[in-house]
Amino acid sequence: MTTPTFTLNNGVQIPAIGLGVFQSKPEETSAAVASALKVGYRHIDTAAVYGNERQVGEGIRASGIDRSEIVIETKVWVSDYGYDETLHAFEKSTRKLGFDELDLLILHQPATHRLEQTLAAYRALETLLADGRVRAIGVSNFMPDHLARLLAETEVVPALNQVELHPYFSQPTVQAADAAAGVLTQAWSPIGGITFYPGWGDHRRSVMDDPTIAAIAAAHGKSPAQVMLRWGIQEGRSVIPKSTNPTRIAENFDVFDFELSAEEMAQLDALDTGVRSGPDPDEERTEFFDRVIPEE
Ligand code: NAP
Image (cartoon, rainbow, N blue to C red; front, top):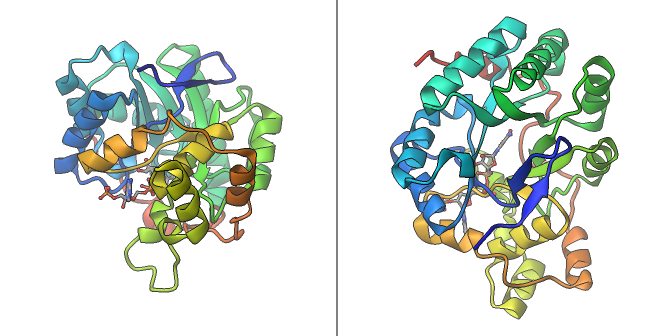
């Protein structure tokens, strides 16, 4: 089956769904990637700071699928922001992945307390794009004010903005700002994964247990995860669910044989609480941001 695609603002096409590998242990990552490619995924989302780019590359090579058919997306970490530093970060990532070129290279955080380095990092992405080393560039966790500043100070409109987005936090304002600028919104934690983060305490409610989502899922003979992914894709978002479990990897991809009604979509939209589960993009998290990305 050919996966439906979204066309980025520079004409590059990406599959509507990709595999995320945040918190996938290195020793489990290549098997997860191989398992995903086997059931039809053609897009993998990793990041320098996830520490598993090498295993993503291994999983892709083990699949035997032609590199040109697969969209590889990775992210530059904050400690590598700055023009020369980001060019070097590209070399580190490509060396670990084992491929000379990338499909999507994005800035992982706006790092608003380090604005000049962030802008310089983005200019390095523009250079990599102009040199044909990456097919598209973008950002992550950019709120409308961050995006406006970037648009005002740089040349290339980001192809996408990867943000926390699930039924309990659907960020309509971010989506509107992205759309107005021609930026594709890409949903991280599309099935609410971040609510499972260890250490957040017991007060978090998982979208997985939501009764409205459960009822819609039952009506279609699908799982809550499948409903949330379908909702995202039907609203025109790229979704990148993470799993290392082959059954769930396959389940998350099996979302192209049903359609949610306008009423169901409206019910899902109405679940937004306006409360993020993940970190505030404006927060300076020095210890985390300064984490050094190894050369090898
Ligand atoms: P997610 O994909 O919404 O959820 C992942 C969690 O759900 C895992 O615990 C996974 O466990 C479980 N799961 C997967 N499929 C399931 C299913 N069908 N039924 C029940 N449980 C299921 O959350 P995420 O990993 O936070 O986000 C997805 C991707 O977005 C990441 O992997 C990463 O690539 C990206 N991301 C980016 C940022 C950023 O700042 N840019 C932040 C967070 C995430 P198992 O593995 O055991 O299945």
